[in-house]
Length: 404
Image (cartoon, rainbow, N blue to C red; front, side, top):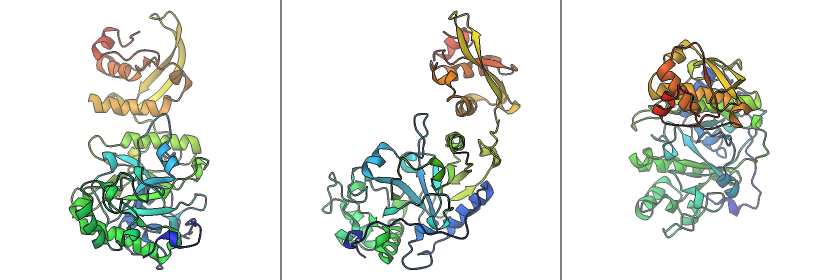
């Protein structure tokens, strides 16, 4: 095994085209991800093609926000030039995501990349979370805060070439600090050695047993340019973990936002991680999970309709923007905090970017919604005003859900 720096060539873009491009339907995407997960070939048809080009599931856990797109490069990724993902396969599985997140997006394998999507470069692989924020070389190199003798430098430079050697170094030198572990270089110029290095990374996971099962692995990819059009990004699916407090509504937020910005529908997949090493991950499609249907129609799951209007408000004596909301029958049946959260999440996805809300946001829209649920759930229509403040439940109800 050798280091990419020993080759006098520039970094090449991995752009292998497959004749079998996955269909975009939700069902077909779930089947494709399942095939990728169970495909444990060591390479993709030749010794110079690492497995991540064609199999496994490459994904990034994200945190949605009104202030940025989940698929945008983070400031840290822009600064370092590298972005963190994970790689999930039957023989490279784990039970949790970074920071215990519960949603994100999946990338197409390079060899299944549709012709209209931008390729990406995989740089290095860590058998477990590599603490890459503090590392040099796009997150693949040493860390100035590492305390191990090798300072977390790339594995080959430390003469670590097999999974067993990596596991031994981890057990004796990391001392619980993942910045002390080394990452395997898998850059394209390494040719067949990139394949060997990636397989060593997966082997290290198996050597570590339950320790690696309880912590996600990490791939570093070249950070894509902020100038790359969103429609060209190689996103195969948005995903969520179907567990209590899971990220379904966050996945819906991302799906709807991506569709509104690109006109491209990307399916939401329920990805279940195994809770023991003897079990496997699953990938499922449910039409009820989608915020946008495959035909591109926004799904009114909880909110049948909502209309903005300027109305005189007796509390302020001014005309204020008001959103008249009509719930579906399913929306009216939602109970408890989880029920109101689900309805509010749909309200946010559909209307929070409207200027009537954004320019007049007093922070009380959710409080008003909960208040109406508590005292007027079965009204045919109720009004929410963005300017209203977020007060206690008791004060909101005392004001008839219209605090000022």
